[in-house]
Structures are given as structure tokens and as C-alpha cells.
Length: 446
Image 1 (cartoon, rainbow, N blue to C red):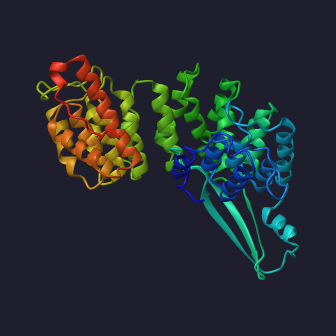
Image 2 (cartoon, one colour; image 1 turned 90 degrees about the vertical axis):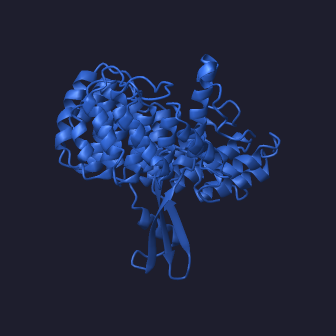
């Protein structure tokens, strides 16, 4: 089972009876999915009735294996207790898994793999570090490093380097207190921001108690000399910004100077995201200069975040006369979006066009720009331009959306975007049938 298999597995499992996977067949499939490292397939099998506590054919306990192997995302699915229809793992098994994973924290993974193969430390071996994705369905990447050691006689041993994430997750489940500094150290031990160790520490800190103390701790680190520490602290502030917080004003004062001072694009991306969230449709004047940043990822972030500076969805209007700009939307925000929508980088154009499409801004310049990008080489630039025109009752946008909707295999994201526009148009038709009753169906009905 490789990446991309989870949707196919879901389809294959739909007609399977609820108890068909409770025995050896389900256990065998679960073992194969766990070995492949595909947590989404593991989840599908568990939802279909596979038993996470049933030993594999060789007597191995699945949860203990995942803890020893370092398969954090797989283990999280095996011990997940938030589903009423999944079979549950006993608490003592989870506590055993915690101790197994903890033992790895004091080990050198390569040395331990040599020991398990009975090889001397100076024996020739090929060591590979494979970066793998552990999720198909999530909108953000979840990655792990798989360490594989191969001796000259062909014998192999491997492990996934995410034991710190497992320890962090299980300690959180058992309400075992851990200091913020310790969680930071675990995240930075290998340091990739998309790693399981990193992301699990972020989750525990962002959703833990004493959010004001956590904010103060992170705020003290945003100007740290270590770029990895700054990346972690700014990402944590971004996560903390997703909910109403009593420290909103302090957060803006912490983040504002970092918009000018931060020179690392990854940390700066988090600073922009956090600043925009904490403003809550406030003033993004400090963000606008970054629309000219040399890194296209930063320009794309600015394009996406400017949506918080614009109110009201687009209205149904036959033409942009008179021009319409939502109340309190600064003209420099409109000018910045128009500039970003013409960026040489595709993802930047996509972000700006989507923000414009979903905004209430309706001027001749906006419609002209959207019309221009109906033929863009980038699929999602075309889609966003078409969506913007369709939501403004422009037939040329409807035609492009209808074309994408009729394609045999549009991507899931493209199909969803067409569906979103269709849903809005249908709602309008129901509310004002004389205006929009002529809107055609954009997606074929199954």
C-alpha cells in the first residue's frame, strides 16, 4: 500500500459487512497498512471493523509494534478513542507503548538498528534516510523520516524516527505534565517543521491549559538567535491565533516588529498568518509591503491573508457600474491584490485570484483582470478567475466552470470549488429566482 491508496481502500470497504474484518483477514490488512506507514488506510480499516488490539499472525501486538517502530500517525489511529464504532485498546497497552517509545529517546537509532542485527558498529552498511508522507487525505503535509540500515549480506533493519512524537502524544493522553522547554527540545531534536515530533509538540502546546502562559513563553522566543526556535515559536503563535484570546493586543505588538525584522521565510510565513488572525478584520497595513517579498511563498501568504481585510461576499450584479468596494476596505489592499493576481508565480496568482473572487470587490479593473486569467495555464488560477466572474453573474465565468465540471476526472479540489460556486448560485436562485433562475447546473449529477 502506497500513498494515494486510501480513497481506493475506502471504496473497496464500503460493501464489506461490519464484522468481516474483525478476524484474521482484517488483522492481516491492518498489518500491511501499518508496515506501509499509511495512517489513512489504517484508519479506514479500523473504521470498517479491524481490531487494533488483536495480535498479528506472529503474535505481535500492533500498538507495541507501532511504538517500537516509531510510527506515530499509525499509533494515533490504533489508540484513537473518539470513535464509538471502533474497537478500543486497553489502557495498559497504551501505557506499555509509552514506555517502549520512551526507551528510544536515549538511543542512537542507527546504533540500535546495528545492535538488533547483531552487527559491529564498524561493520560496513548502507544507511538510508527516507522522507515519507504518512497521510493522503490531510490538507497539510505530515512527514516522517524512515531510517533503513542494510548490511553487506543483505540483512536490513529500519525504524521511523518519531518516537518523541509518540511520547508527547501519549503523555498528553495520560495528563502527564511536561514542560514547554522539554516539548521544544523534542521538536527541535531533528528540527523539520513538517515532522511528527514537531507537529505533535505544537498540538499539545496550542491546545493545552494556561494559553496565556504559553503565549508569553512563545513571545519570548520569536527573536531567538536560533532560526529553528523562531520557526517553532512563530508557528505556535499562529496556532494560538485561531481562537479568541485575551492576549490579542499583546500578540499584535509582539508580531508587528517581526514583520519587518524576520528574514527566514518559514518563520515569516507564520508571523504573517498569526498577525492577520489576531487582527480579526483589522488593519493589515503592516503586511502590505511584504507583497513585494522575493520569496513567492511569502507573496502567496499575503495574498491569502488579505481576505481578512475585506468584508462581504460578492453580490449578484450584471455589471460593475457603479464600482463596488466593501465598506472599510482600504484602496491599497485592492491595489495590492490586483498586483499579486498578476504575479509571475502561479500559486501567488491563485491565492490573490481566490481572495478577489470571494471578496465583495467589483470594479471594471477587477472584472478585466478576472477575464484575462480565464485562459491561465494554471488550473486553479483559471478556476478562481471563473469563480469570481460567475459569482458576479458573468456568463464567461460560468462557461469555464461548466467546462471543468464536465471533465471526466477533475481533481477533488477543483470539483469542490465548482461545487461551492454552484451552491452559492443555487442559494441566490432560491432567494431571488427572477435574477438567477437561469443559472445552469455546473457539475454532472451522479
